[in-house]
Length: 282
Ligand code: NAD
Image (cartoon, rainbow, N blue to C red; front, side):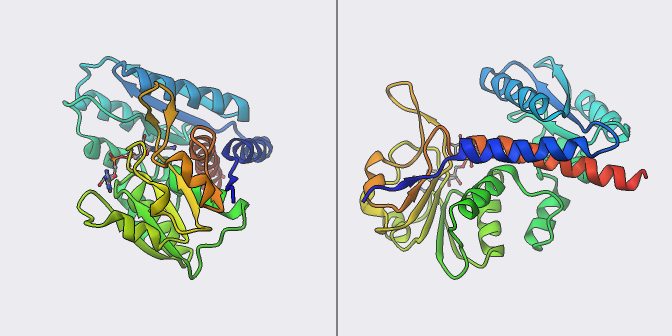
């Protein structure tokens, strides 16, 4: 048996086409403001991708590059200004931030209606209540992939490896909302292998190459590899060992699986923010 590879690149392209069409129906061009503090090379690449994704879909991207020694007060002042601007629909702060700036303080300063990353506590709370305003991009991308391949979490055993605020926790909530029976594993889980073997749907977001071996996967399970690691050969890889392809029914490649979907979901959220903003100002 060889797993069907879930093509995130193709699905992301179709999501982007849809966003582009919907953007044309709006009375004003949607605008996403992206704030990058410092010059972390990976963050700079991500910001560049975001700008080009926006351009592809007809979304205006305002790119704010701040010095690495920018103070928290200065960042908060910029966020405040962007919150007040009617022509700005979405605000995103590229993580990680330099140590003098508290992530949580800045995230909480963003107007929840413009919080397209869905990191603001109000938006996190809404996700918890199954009444989301915005869906968190990576977990939403995973759910879209599962839907596309007809994998329904309802009544299935779902195991999520990782409990971060960005991936693991919101992933677990979306699976729960979709009626999965969800287990979340983390570094203190004593027997990861036996928990993973229970999974009909296994999502790994640990950031450790080779963590998920074939003997940890139930035959026929759907396996989603969220992680993006740099392997010893310098190439990108996920958490899931290549041999899992012989055991799973579905598997996401890295790259080309969840990554493109995360990017596409940011555009969906920006469109949604613009639609909500235009309803308010009509
Ligand atoms: P993180 O470091 O904040 O969290 C990792 C989680 O994995 C932690 O909760 C930890 O408890 C758990 N973990 C680590 N080692 C483990 C082990 N041996 N056994 C069980 N659990 C273990 O990372 P994150 O921000 O959640 O990202 C996770 C991975 O996903 C990274 O590789 C990151 O690059 C990737 N990522 C990919 C996308 C995407 O779009 N594909 C988006 C965000 C993050």
